[in-house]
Length: 330
Image 1 (cartoon, rainbow, N blue to C red):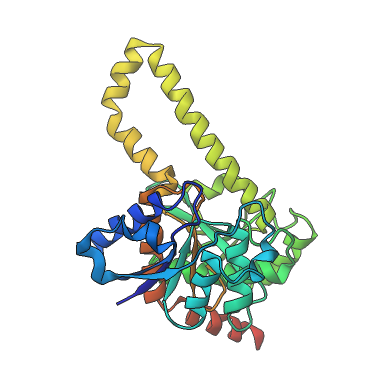
Image 2: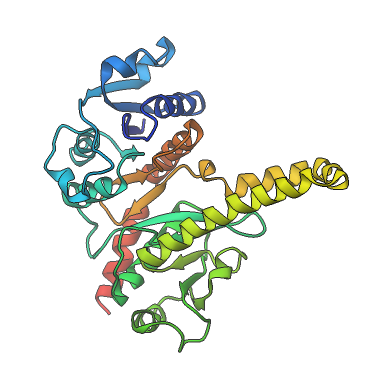
């Protein structure tokens, strides 16, 4: 049975939404949840029927969101440090944390280590696109400054995720740029383009709009650009929802139309809702680490746990190492 360690105290709203998410996950799937945090506070929230599936690891401190990520390695009493140590020691199969993302990433890289030939791990996320598809984008925040070889490796890791986790047999990979032509982009993306030509799955440069039109399965970029795209997309989705609601209220005909379009709006919300994905995997480290938003709802935590279970049951890390070893010999 898969064992998932959960940073029970790491979210912005305390342990309640995290524990509720764990309980929702246990209602739907059988796995062992290892809750890292203040046992006295956590245990009173756990119904007796789940006691056989839950283990507690006492941790009295939470890594502050105001702290610098590099300080995470110094404090061995925090929930995220202890969760990562469980993974390092083989006492669990995956970690889910809604705490300080930089601390999670730093600890995972330093304590667990990178896969063979991986220069830098990347954070990947799923973006909504047409025809009920999803586009995997990486990196979205782990690496602000990248070299061409980093972007090439992100493509290899993204392709492996698309195949092993998303079930896409022949994923299409695009390099995010300011135009589709090979001549477009900055010096790094131009150099990365030449490297990416070695991948049969590479379709060339893609523009921002193609993230959402279903024409590509994996979009590669550095963490600075990826994070900007991610945050901008979230802002646009939120703004459009409010604009639509405002205009509907101002027109009786619109109200009737909205009633008829209720199912459509529901499907749109599901596609753009972060809770549906729950978290972003840190790809390129030796074990499964899922980074969730600090404001994660119980549903988001539940789905982050499901991601961890699926990741742990896959062969994605073997695929990444084999692919990178192949290209290292070229």
